[in-house]
Length: 335
Image 1 (cartoon, helix red, strand yellow):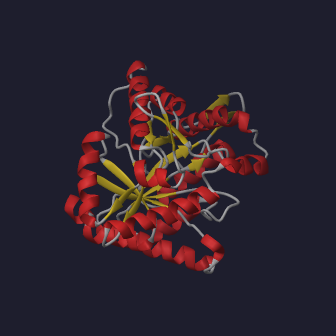
Image 2 (tube, rainbow, N blue to C red):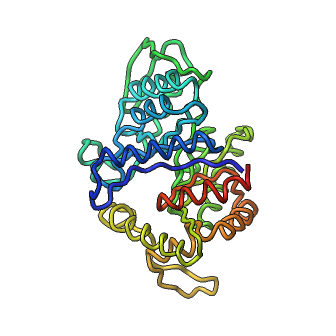
């Protein structure tokens, strides 16, 4: 099993100076570089203190400077908000400056505030995302590029620099729904699986992706499928459960709610057809997060490797102590 970290830059309550948020994150990333993690995956967000990271590519340059081995993932570059040629240039430049350590993850985005502020109609988000990814890949693969699409047109453009990794860095598409998974499969791209789906939901998305990939005739490449999971590790299961509850409450208040158009479901249909009411915070504890003592977390990872084909865990620690506890007491058992 491989391990990465989904790195947020959360600023809860704005209690600390923002410079301290970035310093702590970079300190954590340096620990990752020294302890066996495969990659840090940087999360892009705008106009929110849920995660103050408007440019994963700029942060990525800092990561490249401070590390020597760790791969630098984007989870994700929000492709609809970029001109795709600028996006191709920035990711390729990061790949050059990092010595070919980029993992490029692209996503569509979902936050109405972001789309409204950037002046991009949400109704166009899927089509813009898909065309932008296609253009980035074409810019990397071709010496010069001609394009006549729905949203962008240009001719005989030489996009420089080209990435250090040839023909380009490994590419993933964020897949938070069956439709997204089906497109990624048809396009021959590996999926990035997010931290808010239930364990059963992950299986459904992955199965949809595989069917689409096989139906389009793409070979099974063996590329990793990074699966993000919220993580809490503590000395006792009870302490870890409380970390999950606090973290989930913050997520629901700032990110996964009706104002963002992404509220978690509050009802669950049982096998017998009856409906169960689901508390949005307890849902994370019951069906989403990985949590507990180091022994419990280790056992859960072994079980999930079989139940949901988990072979690349992208940890999203809900506290710094959880990150340290996982790094010191769980990670070495799997390396």
